[in-house]
Image (cartoon, rainbow, N blue to C red; front, side, top):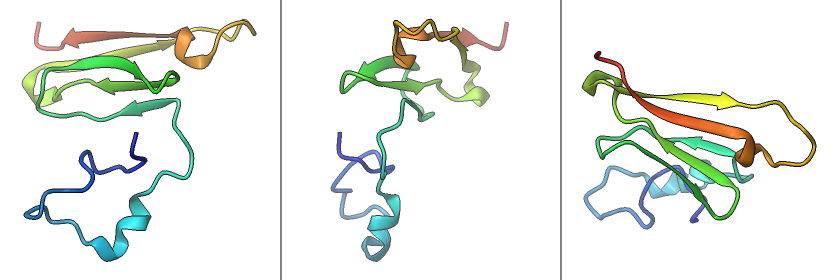
Length: 91
């Protein structure tokens, strides 16, 4: 994981990214859950072993994600206690 909010690093040369402020996009800590809506098909996936990445899709296109965090039982990490369901919101 490249620890940037911008999805591609380095960004394409035509992307409107001001490199003088690139350090402001750096994540100082690794998130437990990262929600990044995009136009690609919705998905959720554990990456880097302990980061849950959720792409709920675009609400305007009719999809969203329902996220349930189960109570802490002391034996499971946060990522193991989260349930994600991608939902069609138009029906």
